[in-house]
Length: 111
Length: 117
Image 1 (tube, rainbow over the protein chains, first blue to last red):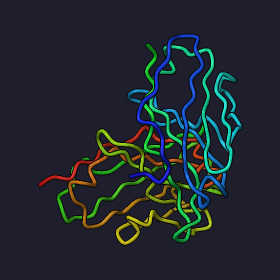
Image 2 (cartoon, rainbow over the protein chains, first blue to last red):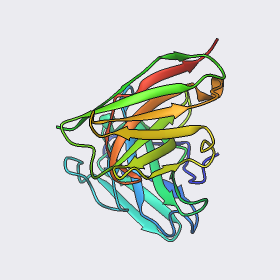
Image 3 (cartoon, helix red, strand yellow):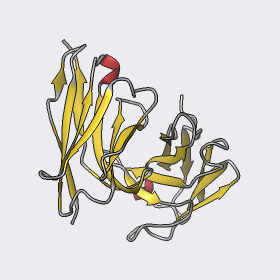
């Protein structure tokens, strides 16, 4: 069971706005940056958001990240069919000499 | 263009050691975090550990007693060894590069390793 908690599924219709949450604790999200990954079917994960709300070059501005306290969110506006994928949050955790945590993942379905 | 490629046996017997190598092209090993991540069938991503270009390592506490990650800068490669494997270690194994431990900007395509007799 992941220490970073995500909803197992989310859905939306094309053009809609969808948010995916990631809940943690003071030892991870509360005290460290949050990262978001997109894993399209059959592909390796792709870094979507780094340092809470920064987009790597090439990531559309339809994707945005935010963090408040021990929770974080990924928002997708103008939903497209190609956004159908698994989304994972990640963060450094300060406990047990420090390590990286991934959330359990959220499967986004575009209806 | 940075590329990472995993290589190693696709089938490992229970109780044996899983060994994978990640070959890096398009950039040198330094100064990044070189990580291994896995995804068991039907499950989410699990961080295994990293080696920093200086040689320091950090491992998932749940796997720490069985994991060793090493780097060979002369070959631009880093490697994963996971000992005493069981069926629960069956997964797609990815190598990745990060500027921070959790900021993994480049990934290999992944390689499926099955643990079975």
